[in-house]
Image (cartoon, rainbow, N blue to C red; front, side, top):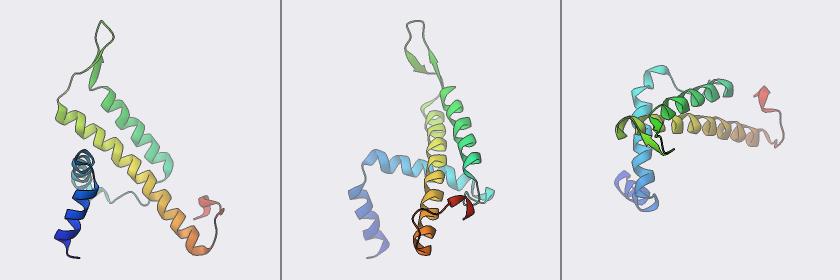
Length: 116
């Protein structure tokens, strides 16, 4: 199957909102390619970063006198901050997936992952 056909299958499978957001995530990842990736990042660092990005997203909103939460930044800024959070969540999931793959290859299910 050529790449064009593969892309069409992805478009048919994914909801338009998910595809749009995945593209936003990829855009942010590419902007940060110079940093070298996440495969060597430990979970503590990734959790710290996701917490930092969450606070940045939270700062894009304010509460009115009536208690309603309203945006105070542009939709573009809000989407960028949300993509940052999603990217760090993806990095955590990807690292966990790769560790699980290595465990399966070694034939173990309950190996202490801190040694891998």
